[in-house]
Length: 194
Image (tube, rainbow, N blue to C red; front, side, top):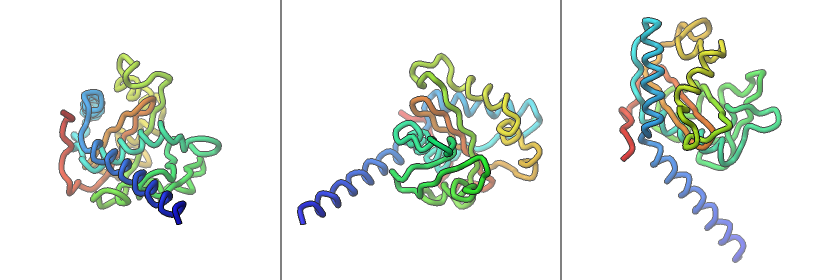
């Protein structure tokens, strides 16, 4: 009986920690806001409209950057779009065949009020955000140099029919994650962290 109570206590504690993390991700840091500005400037160069900074998608992006850094679900055949089973979301291993795309795209609705799919670009650096001189520029340059990721940023080819109305930015440790969505966010705009 003690073992069951201990396991239940640990589960509640881990979920409380995950919930604290989600609450902390409802705002953006200076580095995250810089990336938001850079992405919108890049889109403006292409004649594309600004995307609203979404509180919900920032929660998703921040949680995913944290999950990638702490739980490392991106091992083996699983790439950086994968999620661990260590949070208030469903786990999934995203592979290059895109078989688990729906598992990733549905993430915003799993633990935020965002109603609709979300689409992600992710970046890894050998330096952490704190060690890096300019993680925002490095991440954007990395995505601009990768045709598939660049197309998502500027709505080309497979992403041409999409109209981004929400964007979320998350940076944690060595990871930078950006989520895009077509729907407006009922939670509103993300605020700057104090």
